[in-house]
Length: 378
Ligand SMILES: Cc1cc2nc3c(=O)[nH]c(=O)nc-3n(C[C@H](O)[C@H](O)[C@H](O)COP(=O)(O)O)c2cc1C
Image (cartoon, rainbow, N blue to C red; front, side, top):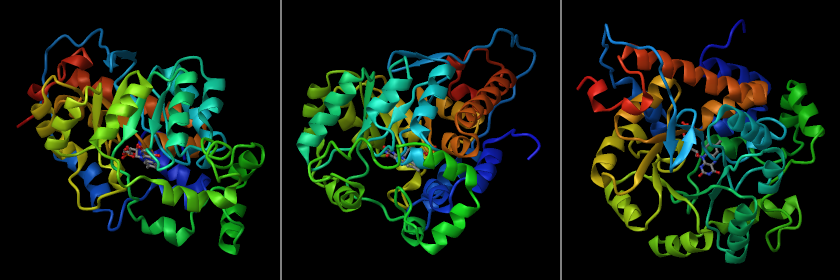
């Protein structure tokens, strides 16, 4: 490929570099993938107003998310198995985000542990929590995130039962991959990936193995994980999690305004309007299509963030116009990571920054924080 100009270019490159089961794990949604597709497609229906002859010098993309300064309001979303897109993936992505000046969110289901990421970063990162049945393990995770000085806890609300993604079942997804004939043939065409993974000790869920009771090695891990998501999680649990954590709390996975209003009552600092990247309830609305309604409903009672389907800086600006104070990208940074490691994550962020900057100017604005409903054609 001559030059990488878009997130789609990074996706094409990642497809060639990353083993099929992990590329597919990123590029998949639940069941028919209709919500996964709608997340991206619905951005295309929103149009900007083009304005001319306004001073567009001295532009700035700087903003804040939950009171923290960000170079642009685009955080890296928590994604499981990121260290399988590229060796030590979470550590590299966290470093790229830190250097760029945007938040990195580490998933509970990461390959590199909280401590691994803390050991290679200087600024605080965010930690995403899944509430599991083993409450001692959950307490311990919260305490470990505190000890690592994480500056926000992102509590995911939309995965108490796992949505079915057909590709993962067909590919026999596991970390590390099992040595079946199909996998061996696939891995033979991905030598750089293999070398990277062979050169690291981080090949399975390091937040879990060695920390959760009954999970001493990888063989017991997959059954433990699938049985562990707690189907009884309720609004009441948010209170004890908030108290034990004691810091900034973000509730992720809100797609309905009634839930958003309940979230605002909890005293959390922000919600993320999200359908888990179309990976959970297939047939749910796209995130961008419900954002305005939710933002209007909660007003200034709680900060509103969104994710799902952002593939360009224009998408970020559209989300800001419709009421988001901040956004997250999942697949765009994963494709960058799979394509080119840390440099690829930086590239994904640079692509989005440049698109945001030019669009801001052509909309007749200088500050990203000035983007609002007025900048859209309605
Ligand atoms: C491969 C993959 C793994 C994910 N793992 C998690 C996870 O462990 N925890 C979580 O809260 N969300 C997870 N998500 C959802 C993302 O945080 C985010 O909501 C979603 O990716 C946003 O959509 P986008 O990928 O279109 O940007 C995952 C998403 C992907 C693509």
